[in-house]
Image (cartoon, rainbow, N blue to C red; front, side, top):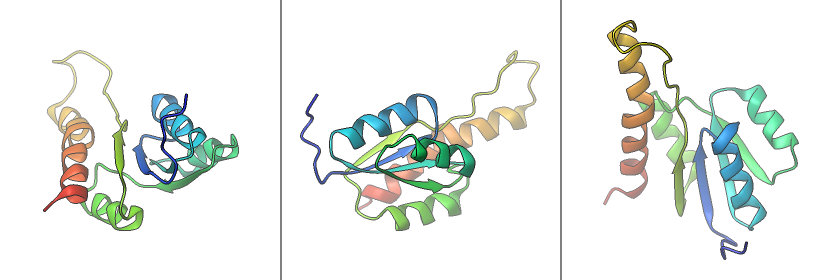
Length: 121
């Protein structure tokens, strides 16, 4: 499918595996310049070895300073795809509140902050 993405700059969080990698792969196959971000350098290297023309960058978007640095490195991106996540498994009441807060810091606040950092006025 040609989505006419040549020369578009795409940043995909959670891009080292699963849905995030599949999205990065499709964007790259359509001609976009893609930066895939994940916490695990080894998984990013394996994803890049798959043959996709992506730039791999290790970063924990659950960390505010890392998010700011990521946007500075990524530059003027056109498309932001947020796929990073560390959803805790288990019962709502069995997991400590700290586990839930850490998960939301990454999955919700990380996304909001990346978007604000990239497109702030």
